[in-house]
Structures are given as C-alpha cells and as structure tokens.
Image (cartoon, rainbow, N blue to C red; front, top):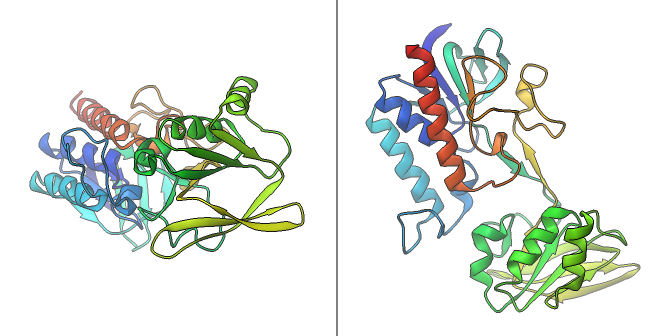
Amino acid sequence: MDSVNLVIIGSGCAGLTAAIYAARANLSPVIVAGTQSGGQLVTTSNVENFPGFPEGINGFELMENMRTQAERFGAQFLSSAVERSDLSEKKLYLDDQKKFKAKTIIIATGASPRLLNIPGEREFFGGKGVSVCATCDGIFFKNREVVVIGGGDSACEEAHFLARFCSKVYIIHRRGQLRASKIMADRALAHPKIEILWNTIPLEICGEKKVTHIRIKEGERERDLPCSGVFLAIGHIPNTQVFEGQIERDREGYILSDGAYSSIPGIFVAGDCCDPVYRQAITAAGMGAAAGISAERYLYE
C-alpha cells in the first residue's frame, strides 16, 4: 500500500483547484480523477460566468487548462475511481487494484443531477437544449420559450431566474400542487411569464440538432409543447455513497463541513459533494482552494 501526503478524490473544479494549491505547496498530491475526468463541466459547451474569460470558454478546455496547470506543479493523476474506503485510517482502495494510505484526503467527488431517463434527455444535453443549471445556461435562451421540470423550491427558483430572459417559462409538474415552500410557490403562481402545467408527465425531448419541443402527457392526452430549452430541476445526488457510514453526511448524502473541514481530522471536502445550495464552478473552485490550503496547514502543523 503506497503512502502519500495527499489524495484528492475528484477532478472537477474543486478537485483541480485543490490540486493546483497542493502541488504548488510541494505536497505531491495524487488525484483520483474518477470515471469522468473533469467532472460535469466537460459536458458544457460554453462557460460564460467563470471570471477571466470575457468571451466565455468551452467547459472541456477550461478543465484541461486547470489539469495542465496542476500537472505543471507536480500533481499526479490517476484515471481510476475509489471502490472502497476506510476513512478512519485514511485508506483508499481503487478500482484498478491500487491502494493508498494518505496523511490527508480531500473529497471533491461532486454531485450528479437526477435525470428523468426519457428519450432525448441525454442526446440534447450540453449546449443542445437540455440543462440542469439556469444560472449557467439561462442567458442562451433569451426571448425564447423554455420548460422547467419539477415542483420544488429548485424548480421555482430556476423558473424565476429564467423568466428574466425568456419570453415564457412552463413548469411541468406531475402533481396538482407544488412541493415548494409557500413563498416560492406563490411567486411562481403570480409571475406573468410563468405557466404551470399540472398533473403533467414529460415523455420525450424532441428536436434535430437542438431541442424544438417536448412531448407531454396531460391526463390521458398527449401533445407536443414547443420550446427551445428543457431545464431539469428534480434535484441532485451527491457522489458520496462510497463513504456511507464513515463520515458525517446530511440525510440527502451531502458531506457536512465547517468550511473545508469534515468531521474527521485530516479529511477535507470541497465542491458539490458538500454544497447543495450554489453548485457553481467558481464556488467549487473557491472551496477547492480552501481545502488545498487547509490540507497544507494540517500537514505542516
């Protein structure tokens, strides 16, 4: 079993920023990149809200730049995933049979959006009309009609944000009453640009190169609803299952933290695996920087 100063689990904005800080501090971090190197951002065609890129930047390119920067300072990347862990001993077992005992660990495993698993959903994801982030992609649908799927606070918040840009926002909800808090539900119901389609089920997202409409079922009737974008707001699943029972998490599975510090000394957290609120590339990067600095201080103290 190899012994190392620091293992960073995850290679999205949080993990890569932590890697840059840790590598510059001569910690020789090992990054377990996971099954999707670069995280969710590699599926985003254009990132316009990351500071420093006034014309925007391709998500894949941004992640490649961050990885190159970390490698320049000596970070080591492994294209494998954690299969099993013993966090009390800071031991990690990877799916390629590698084993590590680390002095410190940064968990930056991110979160995965809940999907509908209907036809067209994956085909039109990433710049083609299907999104899980209105803050990230809403501006691309200016003066167009879009759909938000969900019935909780997230769906109402996404719809409100989109209504700033879009000519019309439909909320598709499978029930006859919103699950959102009363204040959020009342705002959605009162907004002149937002229309709620009750007791409605999405069946298929349709289009050619981009989304043109969504097929829905209202009661026993099916019809096509024209739209340019479909925003999924049915929640996220933090990628923390491999740590179940070993570290403090909330009931949704997000790792509980005090800043970058987890419930276990020497284990730090960053990014969407501990952030159910913002879920932005820039906030993940900031949390990654804090985790990298915290790991350095822990080691040298």
